[in-house]
Image (cartoon, rainbow over all chains, first blue to last red; front, side, top):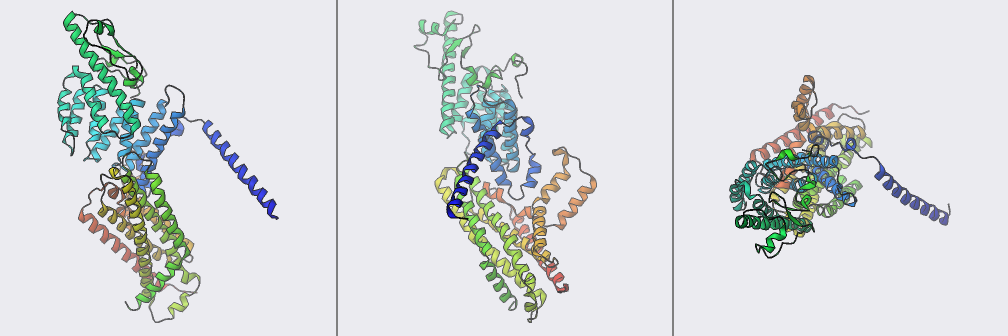
Length: 304
Length: 270
Protein backbone atom coordinates (compact mmCIF):
# COMPACT_ATOMS: atom_id res chain seq x y z
CA UNK A 1 0.00 0.00 0.00
CA UNK A 2 1.19 3.51 -0.68
CA UNK A 3 2.06 5.90 2.07
CA UNK A 4 -0.77 8.49 1.63
CA UNK A 5 -3.36 5.71 1.63
CA UNK A 6 -1.92 4.34 4.86
CA UNK A 7 -2.01 7.76 6.51
CA UNK A 8 -5.61 8.36 5.44
CA UNK A 9 -6.64 4.91 6.66
CA UNK A 10 -4.98 5.48 10.04
CA UNK A 11 -6.63 8.89 10.29
CA UNK A 12 -10.05 7.36 9.64
CA UNK A 13 -9.44 4.62 12.21
CA UNK A 14 -8.38 7.11 14.88
CA UNK A 15 -11.35 9.38 14.16
CA UNK A 16 -13.85 6.50 14.29
CA UNK A 17 -12.21 5.25 17.46
CA UNK A 18 -12.70 8.61 19.18
CA UNK A 19 -16.31 8.92 17.97
CA UNK A 20 -17.13 5.36 19.04
CA UNK A 21 -15.65 5.83 22.48
CA UNK A 22 -17.56 9.07 22.98
CA UNK A 23 -20.83 7.43 21.88
CA UNK A 24 -20.30 4.45 24.17
CA UNK A 25 -19.56 6.72 27.13
CA UNK A 26 -22.76 8.64 26.43
CA UNK A 27 -24.84 5.50 25.93
CA UNK A 28 -23.50 3.79 29.02
CA UNK A 29 -24.74 6.69 31.13
CA UNK A 30 -28.27 5.94 29.90
CA UNK A 31 -28.10 2.32 30.98
CA UNK A 32 -30.57 1.68 33.78
CA UNK A 33 -28.95 1.77 37.17
CA UNK A 34 -30.83 0.35 40.08
CA UNK A 35 -30.43 -1.77 43.12
CA UNK A 36 -29.94 -4.95 41.08
CA UNK A 37 -26.82 -3.59 39.44
CA UNK A 38 -25.57 -2.34 42.76
CA UNK A 39 -24.65 -5.71 44.18
CA UNK A 40 -21.42 -5.77 46.12
CA UNK A 41 -19.67 -9.07 46.72
CA UNK A 42 -19.28 -9.94 50.38
CA UNK A 43 -15.86 -9.25 51.83
CA UNK A 44 -15.17 -12.89 52.67
CA UNK A 45 -15.57 -13.88 49.00
CA UNK A 46 -13.57 -10.93 47.70
CA UNK A 47 -10.73 -11.82 50.04
CA UNK A 48 -10.39 -15.09 48.14
CA UNK A 49 -10.47 -13.56 44.69
CA UNK A 50 -8.12 -10.72 45.63
CA UNK A 51 -5.29 -13.26 46.14
CA UNK A 52 -2.47 -11.43 47.89
CA UNK A 53 -3.70 -8.01 46.83
CA UNK A 54 -6.29 -7.52 49.57
CA UNK A 55 -4.94 -4.10 50.54
CA UNK A 56 -4.93 -2.92 46.95
CA UNK A 57 -8.48 -4.20 46.40
CA UNK A 58 -9.55 -2.33 49.51
CA UNK A 59 -7.99 0.89 48.22
CA UNK A 60 -9.72 0.60 44.87
CA UNK A 61 -13.10 -0.25 46.33
CA UNK A 62 -12.85 2.87 48.46
CA UNK A 63 -11.90 4.93 45.41
CA UNK A 64 -14.95 3.50 43.63
CA UNK A 65 -17.25 4.82 46.35
CA UNK A 66 -15.43 8.15 46.41
CA UNK A 67 -15.64 8.61 42.65
CA UNK A 68 -19.28 7.51 42.56
CA UNK A 69 -20.35 10.02 45.16
CA UNK A 70 -18.20 12.67 43.48
CA UNK A 71 -19.94 12.02 40.14
CA UNK A 72 -23.35 12.72 41.69
CA UNK A 73 -22.35 16.36 42.16
CA UNK A 74 -23.16 16.79 38.46
CA UNK A 75 -26.82 16.09 39.17
CA UNK A 76 -29.28 18.93 39.53
CA UNK A 77 -31.91 17.38 41.83
CA UNK A 78 -32.21 18.57 45.40
CA UNK A 79 -31.85 15.03 46.73
CA UNK A 80 -28.86 14.30 44.58
CA UNK A 81 -28.18 10.79 45.77
CA UNK A 82 -30.97 8.25 45.94
CA UNK A 83 -31.52 6.04 48.96
CA UNK A 84 -30.35 2.85 47.25
CA UNK A 85 -27.20 4.64 46.14
CA UNK A 86 -26.38 5.50 49.73
CA UNK A 87 -26.93 1.87 50.64
CA UNK A 88 -24.64 0.81 47.83
CA UNK A 89 -21.94 3.23 48.98
CA UNK A 90 -22.28 1.84 52.46
CA UNK A 91 -21.87 -1.73 51.16
CA UNK A 92 -18.80 -0.79 49.14
CA UNK A 93 -17.22 0.87 52.16
CA UNK A 94 -18.13 -2.10 54.33
CA UNK A 95 -16.48 -4.48 51.86
CA UNK A 96 -13.46 -2.24 51.52
CA UNK A 97 -12.99 -2.34 55.28
CA UNK A 98 -13.49 -6.11 55.30
CA UNK A 99 -10.52 -6.44 52.98
CA UNK A 100 -8.43 -4.11 55.12
CA UNK A 101 -10.13 -3.39 58.43
CA UNK A 102 -7.39 -0.99 59.50
CA UNK A 103 -7.88 1.41 56.58
CA UNK A 104 -8.98 4.81 57.91
CA UNK A 105 -10.21 6.47 54.71
CA UNK A 106 -13.43 4.44 54.20
CA UNK A 107 -14.40 4.99 57.84
CA UNK A 108 -13.68 8.68 57.65
CA UNK A 109 -15.45 9.13 54.34
CA UNK A 110 -18.37 6.95 55.42
CA UNK A 111 -18.89 8.90 58.61
CA UNK A 112 -18.81 12.26 56.90
CA UNK A 113 -21.21 11.29 54.10
CA UNK A 114 -23.48 8.45 55.18
CA UNK A 115 -24.72 10.44 58.17
CA UNK A 116 -25.18 14.00 56.93
CA UNK A 117 -25.90 13.01 53.36
CA UNK A 118 -27.62 9.66 53.47
CA UNK A 119 -29.10 9.57 56.94
CA UNK A 120 -27.75 6.02 57.35
CA UNK A 121 -26.83 6.56 60.98
CA UNK A 122 -26.96 2.93 62.11
CA UNK A 123 -24.87 1.83 59.14
CA UNK A 124 -22.34 4.60 59.72
CA UNK A 125 -22.08 3.60 63.34
CA UNK A 126 -21.63 -0.06 62.39
CA UNK A 127 -18.65 1.09 60.34
CA UNK A 128 -17.37 3.21 63.23
CA UNK A 129 -17.72 0.24 65.57
CA UNK A 130 -15.79 -2.03 63.23
CA UNK A 131 -13.04 0.53 62.72
CA UNK A 132 -12.83 1.28 66.38
CA UNK A 133 -12.34 -2.44 67.19
CA UNK A 134 -9.43 -2.81 64.77
CA UNK A 135 -7.86 0.64 65.03
CA UNK A 136 -7.46 0.36 68.76
CA UNK A 137 -4.96 3.25 68.80
CA UNK A 138 -7.33 5.68 67.11
CA UNK A 139 -9.58 7.96 69.17
CA UNK A 140 -11.32 9.53 66.17
CA UNK A 141 -13.67 6.67 65.30
CA UNK A 142 -15.23 6.19 68.77
CA UNK A 143 -15.46 9.96 68.94
CA UNK A 144 -17.42 10.14 65.69
CA UNK A 145 -19.56 7.27 66.88
CA UNK A 146 -20.34 9.19 70.05
CA UNK A 147 -21.30 12.24 68.04
CA UNK A 148 -23.66 10.23 65.83
CA UNK A 149 -25.27 8.65 68.87
CA UNK A 150 -25.73 12.02 70.51
CA UNK A 151 -26.74 14.14 67.57
CA UNK A 152 -28.70 11.84 65.29
CA UNK A 153 -29.93 9.09 67.55
CA UNK A 154 -30.38 11.19 70.66
CA UNK A 155 -28.88 8.43 72.77
CA UNK A 156 -26.84 10.40 75.28
CA UNK A 157 -26.00 7.38 77.37
CA UNK A 158 -24.39 5.48 74.51
CA UNK A 159 -22.73 8.65 73.25
CA UNK A 160 -21.22 9.15 76.65
CA UNK A 161 -19.83 5.59 76.61
CA UNK A 162 -18.32 6.04 73.16
CA UNK A 163 -16.70 9.30 74.19
CA UNK A 164 -15.27 7.70 77.30
CA UNK A 165 -13.78 5.01 75.06
CA UNK A 166 -12.32 7.74 72.83
CA UNK A 167 -10.85 9.58 75.81
CA UNK A 168 -8.98 6.45 76.93
CA UNK A 169 -7.09 6.15 73.66
CA UNK A 170 -3.59 7.61 73.14
CA UNK A 171 -3.34 11.33 72.25
CA UNK A 172 -7.06 11.85 72.82
CA UNK A 173 -8.05 15.32 73.94
CA UNK A 174 -8.60 15.38 77.72
CA UNK A 175 -11.77 17.31 76.99
CA UNK A 176 -13.48 14.20 75.59
CA UNK A 177 -13.99 12.88 79.08
CA UNK A 178 -15.54 16.10 80.29
CA UNK A 179 -17.75 16.21 77.20
CA UNK A 180 -18.84 12.68 78.01
CA UNK A 181 -19.89 13.84 81.46
CA UNK A 182 -21.66 16.91 80.10
CA UNK A 183 -23.80 14.73 77.87
CA UNK A 184 -25.67 13.62 80.93
CA UNK A 185 -27.44 17.00 80.85
CA UNK A 186 -29.98 16.56 78.13
CA UNK A 187 -31.22 20.12 78.19
CA UNK A 188 -27.87 21.39 77.02
CA UNK A 189 -28.35 19.92 73.56
CA UNK A 190 -27.21 22.88 71.51
CA UNK A 191 -24.30 23.58 73.80
CA UNK A 192 -23.09 19.99 73.53
CA UNK A 193 -23.56 19.99 69.79
CA UNK A 194 -21.39 23.10 69.57
CA UNK A 195 -18.68 21.48 71.67
CA UNK A 196 -18.76 18.35 69.46
CA UNK A 197 -18.68 20.35 66.27
CA UNK A 198 -15.66 22.30 67.51
CA UNK A 199 -13.71 19.09 68.09
CA UNK A 200 -14.72 17.72 64.72
CA UNK A 201 -13.58 20.90 63.00
CA UNK A 202 -10.26 20.59 64.80
CA UNK A 203 -9.67 17.19 63.21
CA UNK A 204 -10.67 18.16 59.69
CA UNK A 205 -8.06 19.17 57.17
CA UNK A 206 -9.93 19.23 53.86
CA UNK A 207 -10.85 22.84 53.01
CA UNK A 208 -14.22 21.87 51.48
CA UNK A 209 -15.29 19.91 54.53
CA UNK A 210 -13.97 22.63 56.85
CA UNK A 211 -16.10 25.24 55.11
CA UNK A 212 -19.16 23.09 55.56
CA UNK A 213 -18.36 22.35 59.20
CA UNK A 214 -17.65 25.99 59.96
CA UNK A 215 -21.05 27.00 58.58
CA UNK A 216 -22.68 24.29 60.67
CA UNK A 217 -20.81 25.42 63.75
CA UNK A 218 -21.85 29.05 63.18
CA UNK A 219 -25.47 28.04 62.76
CA UNK A 220 -25.31 26.06 66.00
CA UNK A 221 -23.64 28.97 67.78
CA UNK A 222 -26.36 31.30 66.54
CA UNK A 223 -29.00 28.91 67.83
CA UNK A 224 -27.22 28.60 71.16
CA UNK A 225 -26.91 32.36 71.52
CA UNK A 226 -30.59 32.93 70.78
CA UNK A 227 -31.67 30.06 73.04
CA UNK A 228 -29.90 31.71 75.95
CA UNK A 229 -31.56 35.01 75.11
CA UNK A 230 -34.97 33.35 75.04
CA UNK A 231 -34.37 31.89 78.49
CA UNK A 232 -33.40 35.36 79.76
CA UNK A 233 -36.53 36.84 78.14
CA UNK A 234 -38.72 34.23 79.77
CA UNK A 235 -37.08 34.94 83.12
CA UNK A 236 -37.78 38.65 82.77
CA UNK A 237 -41.25 38.67 81.24
CA UNK A 238 -42.63 35.30 82.22
CA UNK A 239 -43.45 34.22 78.66
CA UNK A 240 -41.69 33.30 75.45
CA UNK A 241 -41.01 35.99 72.84
CA UNK A 242 -43.29 35.74 69.80
CA UNK A 243 -40.61 36.58 67.30
CA UNK A 244 -36.87 37.05 67.23
CA UNK A 245 -37.16 40.83 66.95
CA UNK A 246 -38.79 40.90 70.40
CA UNK A 247 -35.39 40.05 71.82
CA UNK A 248 -33.93 43.20 70.28
CA UNK A 249 -36.75 45.57 71.08
CA UNK A 250 -36.66 44.44 74.71
CA UNK A 251 -32.87 44.97 74.72
CA UNK A 252 -31.98 41.36 75.51
CA UNK A 253 -29.59 41.26 72.55
CA UNK A 254 -28.19 43.91 70.22
CA UNK A 255 -28.58 42.07 66.95
CA UNK A 256 -29.52 38.69 65.56
CA UNK A 257 -26.48 36.67 64.47
CA UNK A 258 -26.19 36.03 60.75
CA UNK A 259 -27.55 32.69 59.60
CA UNK A 260 -24.72 31.05 57.65
CA UNK A 261 -26.99 29.20 55.21
CA UNK A 262 -28.86 32.34 54.15
CA UNK A 263 -32.02 31.43 56.07
CA UNK A 264 -33.29 33.07 59.23
CA UNK A 265 -33.89 32.10 62.83
CA UNK A 266 -37.40 31.98 64.25
CA UNK A 267 -39.13 31.11 67.51
CA UNK A 268 -41.85 28.47 67.76
CA UNK A 269 -44.88 28.89 69.98
CA UNK A 270 -43.20 26.53 72.45
CA UNK A 271 -40.24 28.89 72.72
CA UNK A 272 -37.86 26.76 70.67
CA UNK A 273 -35.38 28.60 68.50
CA UNK A 274 -35.16 27.14 65.01
CA UNK A 275 -33.76 28.07 61.65
CA UNK A 276 -35.44 28.01 58.27
CA UNK A 277 -32.45 26.03 56.93
CA UNK A 278 -32.96 23.26 59.41
CA UNK A 279 -32.41 20.66 56.70
CA UNK A 280 -28.76 21.69 56.71
CA UNK A 281 -28.51 20.86 60.36
CA UNK A 282 -30.52 17.68 60.04
CA UNK A 283 -29.88 15.76 56.84
CA UNK A 284 -32.96 15.77 54.65
CA UNK A 285 -35.05 16.12 57.79
CA UNK A 286 -35.32 12.39 57.81
CA UNK A 287 -34.64 12.36 61.47
CA UNK A 288 -36.05 14.48 64.16
CA UNK A 289 -33.74 16.56 66.26
CA UNK A 290 -35.73 16.06 69.41
CA UNK A 291 -34.75 12.84 71.12
CA UNK A 292 -37.87 12.88 73.26
CA UNK A 293 -40.28 12.50 70.37
CA UNK A 294 -39.17 9.81 67.95
CA UNK A 295 -42.79 9.08 67.06
CA UNK A 296 -43.03 12.41 65.28
CA UNK A 297 -41.01 11.05 62.37
CA UNK A 298 -42.94 10.97 59.11
CA UNK A 299 -43.71 7.37 58.18
CA UNK A 300 -41.48 5.70 55.63
CA UNK A 301 -38.85 8.38 55.66
CA UNK A 302 -36.54 6.72 58.10
CA UNK A 303 -34.13 4.56 56.20
CA UNK A 304 -32.43 3.01 59.17
CA UNK B 1 29.03 -27.34 46.18
CA UNK B 2 31.81 -27.00 43.63
CA UNK B 3 29.66 -28.77 41.07
CA UNK B 4 26.53 -26.82 41.99
CA UNK B 5 28.02 -23.37 41.71
CA UNK B 6 28.83 -23.36 37.95
CA UNK B 7 25.31 -24.53 37.13
CA UNK B 8 23.80 -21.92 39.44
CA UNK B 9 25.92 -19.19 37.91
CA UNK B 10 25.13 -20.14 34.35
CA UNK B 11 21.41 -20.33 35.15
CA UNK B 12 21.61 -16.90 36.73
CA UNK B 13 23.41 -15.44 33.72
CA UNK B 14 20.91 -17.01 31.37
CA UNK B 15 18.07 -15.47 33.40
CA UNK B 16 19.61 -12.02 33.47
CA UNK B 17 19.90 -12.10 29.69
CA UNK B 18 16.20 -12.90 29.31
CA UNK B 19 14.39 -10.03 27.63
CA UNK B 20 11.26 -10.70 29.67
CA UNK B 21 13.18 -9.56 32.75
CA UNK B 22 13.47 -6.05 31.34
CA UNK B 23 9.79 -5.98 30.50
CA UNK B 24 8.88 -7.02 34.03
CA UNK B 25 11.23 -4.43 35.54
CA UNK B 26 9.76 -1.74 33.30
CA UNK B 27 6.25 -2.68 34.39
CA UNK B 28 7.30 -2.50 38.03
CA UNK B 29 8.86 0.92 37.54
CA UNK B 30 5.75 2.20 35.79
CA UNK B 31 3.60 0.92 38.66
CA UNK B 32 5.85 2.65 41.16
CA UNK B 33 5.55 5.93 39.26
CA UNK B 34 1.77 5.44 39.11
CA UNK B 35 1.96 5.13 42.88
CA UNK B 36 2.36 8.92 43.06
CA UNK B 37 -0.76 9.58 41.06
CA UNK B 38 -2.92 7.00 42.81
CA UNK B 39 -1.94 7.62 46.42
CA UNK B 40 -2.55 11.35 45.96
CA UNK B 41 -6.26 10.59 45.42
CA UNK B 42 -6.77 9.51 49.01
CA UNK B 43 -7.82 11.68 51.92
CA UNK B 44 -6.27 10.32 55.09
CA UNK B 45 -3.95 7.36 54.92
CA UNK B 46 -1.82 8.19 51.92
CA UNK B 47 1.07 6.32 53.53
CA UNK B 48 -0.95 3.14 53.75
CA UNK B 49 -1.98 3.33 50.10
CA UNK B 50 1.56 4.11 48.98
CA UNK B 51 2.91 1.07 50.84
CA UNK B 52 0.07 -1.09 49.47
CA UNK B 53 0.78 -0.15 45.89
CA UNK B 54 4.56 -0.38 46.21
CA UNK B 55 4.46 -3.82 47.83
CA UNK B 56 1.83 -5.09 45.40
CA UNK B 57 3.90 -3.89 42.45
CA UNK B 58 6.94 -5.78 43.73
CA UNK B 59 4.90 -8.87 44.47
CA UNK B 60 3.23 -8.82 41.04
CA UNK B 61 6.56 -8.42 39.24
CA UNK B 62 8.05 -11.21 41.31
CA UNK B 63 5.17 -13.44 40.27
CA UNK B 64 5.66 -12.58 36.60
CA UNK B 65 9.38 -13.23 37.02
CA UNK B 66 8.77 -16.74 38.33
CA UNK B 67 6.10 -17.51 35.75
CA UNK B 68 7.80 -16.22 32.64
CA UNK B 69 11.52 -16.20 33.33
CA UNK B 70 11.80 -18.99 35.90
CA UNK B 71 9.79 -21.61 34.07
CA UNK B 72 11.50 -20.74 30.82
CA UNK B 73 14.91 -21.24 32.44
CA UNK B 74 13.94 -24.64 33.74
CA UNK B 75 12.40 -25.89 30.55
CA UNK B 76 14.90 -24.46 28.11
CA UNK B 77 17.26 -27.41 28.38
CA UNK B 78 14.38 -29.81 27.87
CA UNK B 79 12.75 -27.91 25.02
CA UNK B 80 15.99 -27.34 23.15
CA UNK B 81 17.34 -30.80 23.94
CA UNK B 82 20.51 -29.28 25.40
CA UNK B 83 19.77 -31.44 28.44
CA UNK B 84 21.60 -34.36 26.73
CA UNK B 85 24.77 -32.34 26.65
CA UNK B 86 24.46 -31.37 30.30
CA UNK B 87 23.71 -34.88 31.50
CA UNK B 88 26.70 -36.33 29.67
CA UNK B 89 28.90 -34.27 31.99
CA UNK B 90 30.13 -35.70 35.28
CA UNK B 91 27.27 -34.36 37.39
CA UNK B 92 24.27 -36.19 38.77
CA UNK B 93 20.74 -35.28 37.81
CA UNK B 94 19.99 -34.18 41.38
CA UNK B 95 22.99 -31.87 41.34
CA UNK B 96 21.71 -30.44 38.09
CA UNK B 97 18.27 -29.71 39.57
CA UNK B 98 19.61 -28.24 42.80
CA UNK B 99 22.19 -26.15 40.94
CA UNK B 100 19.56 -24.83 38.58
CA UNK B 101 17.29 -24.01 41.47
CA UNK B 102 20.05 -22.13 43.30
CA UNK B 103 20.71 -20.08 40.18
CA UNK B 104 17.00 -19.31 39.90
CA UNK B 105 16.82 -18.35 43.60
CA UNK B 106 19.82 -16.05 43.12
CA UNK B 107 18.09 -14.41 40.15
CA UNK B 108 14.90 -13.94 42.19
CA UNK B 109 16.78 -12.48 45.16
CA UNK B 110 18.78 -10.01 43.09
CA UNK B 111 15.78 -8.88 41.03
CA UNK B 112 13.63 -8.56 44.15
CA UNK B 113 16.32 -6.54 45.92
CA UNK B 114 16.44 -4.17 42.96
CA UNK B 115 12.63 -3.88 42.78
CA UNK B 116 12.43 -3.46 46.55
CA UNK B 117 14.86 -0.58 46.42
CA UNK B 118 12.75 1.09 43.74
CA UNK B 119 9.61 0.47 45.83
CA UNK B 120 11.20 1.99 48.91
CA UNK B 121 12.37 4.96 46.89
CA UNK B 122 8.82 5.53 45.67
CA UNK B 123 7.49 5.28 49.24
CA UNK B 124 10.18 7.66 50.47
CA UNK B 125 9.38 10.23 47.77
CA UNK B 126 5.66 10.11 48.55
CA UNK B 127 6.52 10.37 52.22
CA UNK B 128 8.47 13.53 51.51
CA UNK B 129 5.55 14.96 49.52
CA UNK B 130 2.91 14.17 52.18
CA UNK B 131 4.81 13.93 55.48
CA UNK B 132 1.75 14.42 57.71
CA UNK B 133 -0.13 11.51 56.13
CA UNK B 134 2.42 8.91 57.26
CA UNK B 135 1.48 8.74 60.92
CA UNK B 136 1.77 5.00 61.27
CA UNK B 137 4.68 3.82 59.25
CA UNK B 138 7.66 1.59 59.87
CA UNK B 139 10.52 0.78 57.52
CA UNK B 140 11.36 -2.53 59.27
CA UNK B 141 7.85 -3.84 58.56
CA UNK B 142 8.10 -2.79 54.91
CA UNK B 143 11.46 -4.55 54.66
CA UNK B 144 10.02 -7.65 56.31
CA UNK B 145 7.08 -7.67 53.91
CA UNK B 146 9.45 -7.38 50.95
CA UNK B 147 11.60 -10.25 52.29
CA UNK B 148 8.53 -12.41 52.77
CA UNK B 149 7.48 -11.59 49.24
CA UNK B 150 10.90 -12.78 48.02
CA UNK B 151 10.53 -15.97 50.04
CA UNK B 152 7.12 -16.58 48.41
CA UNK B 153 8.65 -16.27 44.96
CA UNK B 154 11.45 -18.70 45.85
CA UNK B 155 8.87 -21.18 47.14
CA UNK B 156 6.75 -20.76 44.03
CA UNK B 157 9.74 -21.31 41.76
CA UNK B 158 10.55 -24.48 43.72
CA UNK B 159 7.02 -25.64 42.95
CA UNK B 160 7.53 -24.73 39.30
CA UNK B 161 10.64 -26.95 39.36
CA UNK B 162 8.60 -29.76 40.83
CA UNK B 163 6.00 -29.45 38.07
CA UNK B 164 8.65 -29.09 35.39
CA UNK B 165 10.29 -32.33 36.51
CA UNK B 166 7.40 -34.40 35.19
CA UNK B 167 5.61 -32.31 32.55
CA UNK B 168 6.58 -32.37 28.93
CA UNK B 169 6.05 -28.76 27.95
CA UNK B 170 6.63 -25.46 29.70
CA UNK B 171 3.03 -24.43 29.09
CA UNK B 172 1.69 -27.15 31.36
CA UNK B 173 4.22 -26.14 34.00
CA UNK B 174 3.02 -22.56 33.70
CA UNK B 175 -0.62 -23.54 34.11
CA UNK B 176 0.13 -25.77 37.10
CA UNK B 177 2.23 -23.06 38.76
CA UNK B 178 -0.49 -20.45 38.27
CA UNK B 179 -3.04 -22.83 39.78
CA UNK B 180 -0.72 -23.58 42.70
CA UNK B 181 -0.25 -19.84 43.26
CA UNK B 182 -4.00 -19.15 43.25
CA UNK B 183 -4.71 -22.08 45.57
CA UNK B 184 -1.83 -21.09 47.84
CA UNK B 185 -2.98 -17.50 48.15
CA UNK B 186 -6.65 -18.23 48.73
CA UNK B 187 -6.52 -21.51 50.64
CA UNK B 188 -6.62 -20.08 54.15
CA UNK B 189 -9.47 -17.72 53.20
CA UNK B 190 -11.38 -20.61 51.59
CA UNK B 191 -10.76 -22.70 54.71
CA UNK B 192 -12.07 -19.90 56.91
CA UNK B 193 -15.10 -19.55 54.63
CA UNK B 194 -16.08 -23.23 54.47
CA UNK B 195 -15.55 -23.63 58.19
CA UNK B 196 -17.92 -20.74 58.91
CA UNK B 197 -20.19 -20.54 55.83
CA UNK B 198 -23.07 -18.92 57.67
CA UNK B 199 -21.26 -15.55 57.47
CA UNK B 200 -22.16 -15.19 53.80
CA UNK B 201 -25.21 -17.43 54.00
CA UNK B 202 -24.05 -20.41 51.96
CA UNK B 203 -24.24 -24.12 52.69
CA UNK B 204 -21.18 -26.33 52.53
CA UNK B 205 -21.17 -30.11 52.69
CA UNK B 206 -19.02 -31.92 55.23
CA UNK B 207 -16.99 -33.56 52.45
CA UNK B 208 -16.02 -30.16 51.04
CA UNK B 209 -14.83 -29.06 54.44
CA UNK B 210 -12.66 -32.19 54.79
CA UNK B 211 -11.28 -31.79 51.27
CA UNK B 212 -10.34 -28.19 51.93
CA UNK B 213 -8.70 -29.19 55.20
CA UNK B 214 -6.64 -31.84 53.42
CA UNK B 215 -5.70 -29.37 50.68
CA UNK B 216 -4.63 -26.95 53.41
CA UNK B 217 -1.81 -29.28 54.39
CA UNK B 218 -0.99 -30.42 50.86
CA UNK B 219 -0.67 -27.08 49.06
CA UNK B 220 1.66 -24.33 50.22
CA UNK B 221 -0.04 -21.68 52.28
CA UNK B 222 1.26 -18.59 50.52
CA UNK B 223 -1.06 -16.19 52.34
CA UNK B 224 0.98 -16.46 55.54
CA UNK B 225 3.79 -14.66 53.73
CA UNK B 226 1.43 -11.86 52.78
CA UNK B 227 1.96 -9.30 55.52
CA UNK B 228 1.28 -6.27 53.33
CA UNK B 229 -1.56 -5.10 55.58
CA UNK B 230 0.71 -5.32 58.60
CA UNK B 231 3.38 -3.36 56.79
CA UNK B 232 0.93 -0.75 55.53
CA UNK B 233 -0.38 -0.05 59.04
CA UNK B 234 2.83 -0.80 60.95
CA UNK B 235 0.98 -3.43 62.97
CA UNK B 236 3.17 -5.49 65.27
CA UNK B 237 4.03 -9.06 64.29
CA UNK B 238 5.30 -11.58 66.83
CA UNK B 239 8.82 -12.91 66.49
CA UNK B 240 7.55 -16.48 66.61
CA UNK B 241 5.25 -15.76 63.64
CA UNK B 242 8.20 -14.48 61.65
CA UNK B 243 10.39 -17.41 62.74
CA UNK B 244 7.85 -20.13 61.90
CA UNK B 245 6.91 -18.51 58.60
CA UNK B 246 10.54 -18.48 57.48
CA UNK B 247 10.96 -22.10 58.63
CA UNK B 248 7.77 -23.10 56.80
CA UNK B 249 8.90 -21.37 53.61
CA UNK B 250 12.35 -22.93 53.64
CA UNK B 251 11.12 -26.42 54.48
CA UNK B 252 8.41 -26.37 51.81
CA UNK B 253 10.94 -25.12 49.27
CA UNK B 254 13.39 -27.87 50.23
CA UNK B 255 10.61 -30.46 49.97
CA UNK B 256 9.58 -29.29 46.52
CA UNK B 257 13.16 -29.21 45.20
CA UNK B 258 13.90 -32.64 46.66
CA UNK B 259 10.71 -33.94 45.07
CA UNK B 260 11.74 -32.42 41.76
CA UNK B 261 15.19 -34.07 42.01
CA UNK B 262 13.69 -37.48 42.85
CA UNK B 263 11.25 -37.36 39.93
CA UNK B 264 13.86 -35.99 37.57
CA UNK B 265 16.27 -38.83 38.41
CA UNK B 266 13.75 -41.39 37.25
CA UNK B 267 12.71 -39.49 34.20
CA UNK B 268 13.49 -41.05 30.85
CA UNK B 269 14.42 -38.88 27.92
CA UNK B 270 13.36 -39.98 24.47
